[in-house]
Length: 377
Ligand code: AMP
Image (cartoon, rainbow, N blue to C red):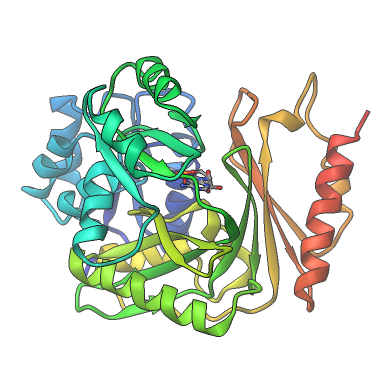
């Protein structure tokens, strides 16, 4: 067990690292963040910010020497970095778990091998693979790069072989999956934490709405049929057990209009759709990650209140900051900003959690607060 006072390492300095660092410091740990960006959101709240590349030998040596345990907020951290650090101290989730989630080809193949449903897909490593894929899938389809795609980035919709060829070239002929675009009734996410002894705690399932491929809201409790929830929890448990996973894991699902439950992807870390836990659960997903990393007992995942989380994207900024008084003036709206200096279209700058004793009221208020921020001028 790693107790308060010890130093915890975080690879990646974005908002997930920031909220992890805040949770860890709140529990009395020291936090060392590795991120080359001098303006990184997590670096700003860490005890120590190592401004170096993820493969920098000196920085890795310091992390390995000073940290009692290390986690990552970013699955694209090089595998060699995780493996090297694991020779010094526990790294959770493990390099092997991160490797599965890092690459859509490995991830989807892993799920298929476990017998867990995904959208039908083909692996594309060269343009010639597209012929069989287009012939074998219902159109429309999505071409997605195997690595480094997120928030709809690295994705192109296609309906014909010619479009698929053009899309593959546009994505730089990188390894891809071509997957069927399924008809969505709902998007859900299961958030769980698994301790080193296999104890697993599930958070209440969130119902997600995406806009332009980016998460917009997570509503909890979601309007999810009980049988679908049960199935989603069972599928997620199988994923966590197959990986012998330690830490917080998010599994994103599609529930189709045909009544099928498919796994879209998983994130080996706290997830945007779990930000509601910061204000609405006994233990936030970030505290839970600290607990799992340190070998502490897991905290309660109990929901204290219905909640809607809504993302605040850079689109809301314009020439000046949004008018935050419009959020502050609602006593049950909780504002979280990540301290990013530059607002860009589609960039996640913060989120709000809106609490109420009624899930519909949370959802409506969150969306209306968003509208008032848009209409600030
Ligand atoms: P991803 O980056 O793969 O999570 O995709 C971002 C969002 O795009 C998802 O949350 C869905 O809203 C949508 N999307 C991605 N893949 C599919 C698919 N195969 N069928 C339908 N919608 C999809």
